[in-house]
Length: 482
Image (tube, rainbow, N blue to C red; front, side, top):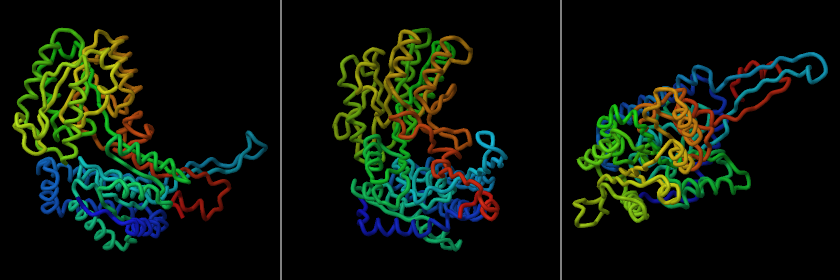
């Protein structure tokens, strides 16, 4: 566990960000794009040292980590392109109209200005893509905000090395060092101190519901509350309609098993609830899924604490009345488990819709390779199950290819509770695009109108500003802040 940054070190990091904020906010597109591309180039150039270090600290494997490093570089370059398209500097210009209101009006320009220094909390499960140079950092820098990185204690040396790389690029480009600064530590106090700092203007967080909800409370309790953009995890229901299972039960079960164990189930989009209707193919699907999971051997989880939380979640589900265990996952340390250290076994259980709806414990995320099958009698019950979930990053619906009242009803319910609705494939894998939305109603995220993945993530860190009858010299800046 890394040593906690002291209160004085946190103050220094924020002070650096504050000092650099005016110049970075006023930077033009070429300056911002050059930094973002420079960070991407440097990250890929240092691959041979960073990937082995990341694997040593996370056990995620070189294949996964190389892909994630490339995704991180892709994100940085995508935001560079977005900046060069003029998106952060967009101006809405309503010309003056002579006469008395309401028809008459002054000239109004609507621009966007950077919100200010952003505290960025790195995630545990994506040591590159949601960490020091991940999407939150890239989108905040693209918006013209300086960033104070709070490193995750699950990969401390990797975080330090990536930050050192970033600082080197910043210095080489002649930019103020405080464009990015850094704090670390595993204690609650470090995060609270950072969020409470009066010069922090917004927070970006990816992590647990418990930690995120607590920090949101801190942000709201400040004398001047600030936006808290928290992505807090999800159960990501999958609805398997009879038509889909009748046609492709075996294929879909095998695909779902692979999604469940991907990264030892440590994805915020890992499927955790599967809604099944009685029908041809359903029992084949269940048996194939069980067998496919039984043959999987996920790697170790990221930290002992995460393994303990996984075991506690499994125990919470298995102890609930009305739940049948289909595939058990012995707790770590159990001699019968055959598991050493933090490596889990996949877990699968089954219940009915009424039990699921009645018991809140069954609706909580089990972060790891686990899923609960919920048997539903009809579409009305399926909708009730989705409503009980309350909020999710994703809902997947298999078999809604043809329009019908039932398909419309399910899609309507899914759209009500999720930030992304899929009609093919599985929810793991979040594309970085303009149309992507990675968020959802509470408890999936704290700000369902914003995304933490995709190019629209930049909008979180830009504040609208109306300029009325602005002088010509200010209009000529074409949206570039002072």
